[in-house]
Image 1 (tube, helix red, strand yellow):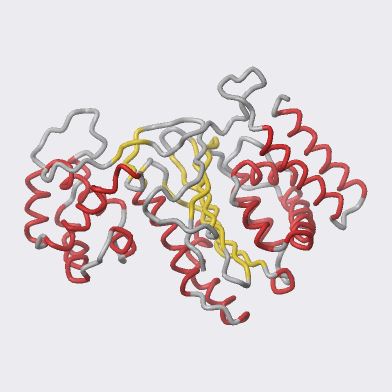
Image 2 (tube, helix red, strand yellow):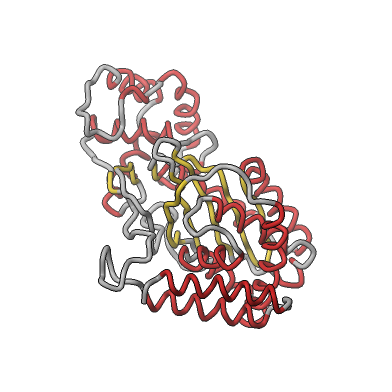
Length: 365
């Protein structure tokens, strides 16, 4: 098993409801046939790489027939892929766990079940699944509540995560992609590219410039007694912070954090990743410790939103930025070959090609 990296995330309009049954029933066999073609030609690890790329993932969803700019493409595509691979997972060497809402909470059990069936140690995969969710919900606090988590892995233990959070204030969803094949760090710049239509102010403890804050936060949790930490939090409750401040004292609830802070102190995690991984340590705990780090110890975490690029295609005139033609050409070529090789009827193939051609036109060469 190699280390993880988050490959990107995308902001999409938040749409409620479900895909129509007639559409989903057509997406399932198309997702299955395209996946079979890709895995047969390039191997299951290549399918992970493709799913981990936000552009390719979005194009895949469009080829299956779903809206381009919709949060539903994430949950529907992952659901269609999971349903489409049922019964052929072992033959392909590709497995899908998790999903939306309640299904996301079944991810560890599903990984363990497959591990037993294919003689694969599930522990590293379960850890990777849990930490990806923890990082994007607690170490990066961008206002998006995670509600979808799909974990796709191979018989060799390679993996990718596609998860999505919602922000009911701005009515957008943000999608996070992880790829486990490159050696990196869960809590230090784990992404290669993060894509978003809008940037905001974010508590970003995965930023490189947050390294001193991560160290200080861990020290606070392990070296200062719980009584002292709670006393500091109560003291901070009386402060009036400037409006620009991203961690509000009104968010602090020292009494409700008492049990978790005591547990962290007793367990003595050796670094920020292990602190973040402790049961019960979530966004509120990390936020409180970050505030102590900044206001009492003078160690400031990063508030830089990790989103770097707009999800929109860009334009041929370079506004808002040039089209990433190389990436799109590669994605379109692979999807085109996969559709050609898929065992589909002529009508289904033609419809898939038509959708692919619309994507090609949309990126404005």
